[in-house]
Image (cartoon, rainbow, N blue to C red; front, side, top):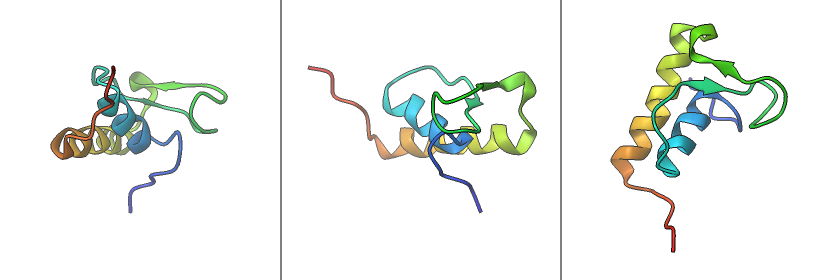
Length: 68
């Protein structure tokens, strides 16, 4: 089961896609922008896979922020 909590790898991947940011695996164990950010080089293969899953699922859904 994938953790989809705020700040999780999945959440950060889907948020990066939503805001049209580049695909750059990272996450926040204490919640988005709280505490330390874990960068890709310090992530497990599972965490990276969850980030990529969140990113790809949002890309496929076409759910992007509208900037006006």
